[in-house]
Length: 258
Ligand SMILES: [Zn+2]
Ligand SMILES: [Zn+2]
View 1 (cartoon, rainbow, N blue to C red):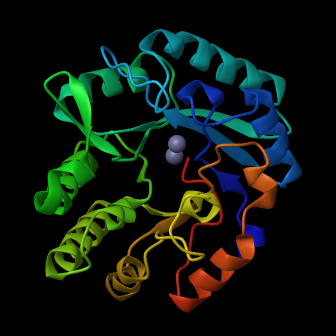
View 2 (view 1 turned 180 degrees about the vertical axis):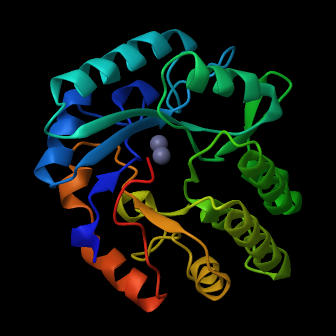
């Protein structure tokens, strides 16, 4: 099944400060993997936000889009390179994101709700304790409704700071139901499976509770490599995901939604 997937729209670049390799090496790795479409979706550079080690500086935006656009030209005919970004939705950034799509030539944006904006800076959800799960879910749903995003990256990211209780289950259901109603794909994210700091051999996400609910409710899903090194295209544990997809009866998209 996974062998038949011919695209990946979730790739970072060294600009975020926690990924490596050159932009071109990511394209070459995607070609080596046999993909037909690869999209760059680096962590959003955000106006007025400085978060070294998490995202590039706002001034790096122009270099990022120039680099991806030149690779798009250079590799046309071999692979379809797309320009995207992985964004934290917040109303504060909505017009900036809209401009990326309408004026800066971005092909797509994906939503990855790692942190939230407040009083001029970004804050991690886990520091909020018990209310984080609902806060994450509310923002995620508002983001889906904004019409800015092609899909939701690791929708089950909240598993990292949620207790697996009734609140968690009801938030999972809200996300899955709204995504289904809006026709927005949810991503089975491969990033955590390569994270050497995780607490066990089994990655925290994709989370079995979330994806078992998805199996029951339905909707569209897709696989995201979430590459932070070019080699992630070739060396990710595809066998683990093959089994995960089989176990939860998931049918990820085989071809790119854009
Ligand atoms: Zn990252
Ligand atoms: Zn990512």
